[in-house]
Length: 447
Ligand code: UGA
Image (cartoon, rainbow, N blue to C red):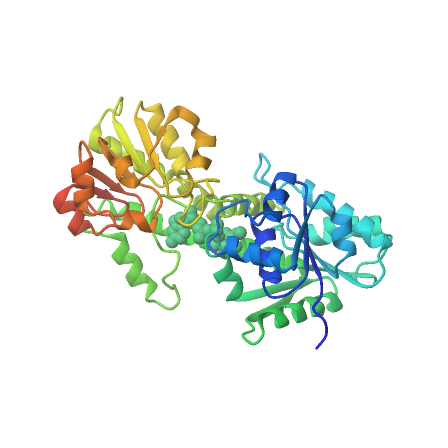
């Protein structure tokens, strides 16, 4: 069997590090580079810079076995020592929703300069989420200009979008629904297909070979579809609330049995957050508008999601009236369970609005407290347990569906709160059981 190709990963954010550790844990030699020296020192010490189940053990093992090395801002060395380079730097949002390509451009320049001196065929692969046309129209010209070489002949260029979710990264990468390989040239696409066939052997997922632009669009279309499902079910939830006896959970479960619809991503709640859906929907809208097409459906998806967290505030006001001086317990800060990420977390607009109304807030999250402190500082208090958070509260809101919150009984709320009023923003409690013992309101539940 041919030797495993050596891999470099530029940018050890969430996707970059999980990709690197995924390969290293299967015996590939991986060299990473990132401009953030703090992040690199942590990784070198075997400490992931963010919370992800299984990552600490896998990272430590990869480093100890010598399969993973991480360098500070040394793209050149990383590319020189390897055969395939993943570009996994961030593509932040600009004011108008379009993506900022400055890191992609900078890294492409560094890679191009290195390719100029490097002998042998090298494949550059864009893993970052970039709008259709970016790999062809931005990355390729920079690589060619800096390397003085020709793409497709002297080096290869692919686009391979990532579909892993935070909190289940390794489950998702070890068992993906599909692998998408967009390639500029046949040879580089074949090399990346071989890489993945070897990586997944013997359980190789469906591999889709396509053009660079189609691969780029598959990523956006997938995230936009999932965001659409969420805003759709939240719309149905909002309708349910006006219909006595209606329950969105039952509606979603029955809809999901239709094979054409499917059961996943139909959990009504306070909307979607995180570093991907909000940013990607905005970027697809901006890209579409720039191309001259008004994507009205996506505008609505975004609009529904913008308003949805404020449902929680509306519910609190319905229960308590004036919020001045009222104690509100917030259960959950992370944008979803199993992560400490609070980017675009739905709790942010909720807390901001409650503070504006004069409420006094105590929040608890199993892992995101320190992240929350950097956002809210001492504007709110932080509890070190769910029960501690409930003490003396006039109302509790479940914002993130952590497993430990599911275990709270009606008695836990009744005994600890001043007024046992519970708002289930993620539909984790059985309405029949909880509404018997406390004042219970939930997203998508007819009054
Ligand atoms: C999402 C996609 O699911 C991944 O496939 C993709 O690779 C990733 O973005 C990315 O582009 O990098 P992620 O942001 O980690 O992954 O989180 P999800 O599990 O998709 O959840 C996103 C948000 O939707 C969360 O706030 C979650 O609470 C919300 N959500 C999800 C709902 O409100 N209802 C649902 O039914 C499902």
